[in-house]
Length: 95
Image 1 (cartoon, one colour):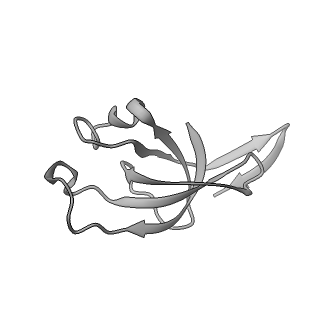
Image 2 (cartoon, rainbow, N blue to C red; image 1 turned 90 degrees about the horizontal axis):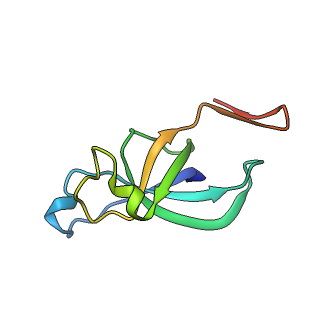
């Protein structure tokens, strides 16, 4: 899993029918301090995430193991919205 921040949405009017109904979001990966690392991914949203929220993203075959993405050609999925995290006993982020 990777930690990321939702920065945008993606709309594709022409796609395979099995992807109909999935919201696609642009996620920039962040490090443990919340700073962008330069990596990004378009991920299917399985949990109702929104812009500026920190999320957990699963990629590869794991991305197809949610109810929303089962049997769909999906390589990345948002599977959790982060409420908080701490590093070394210090709270880095709290929603």
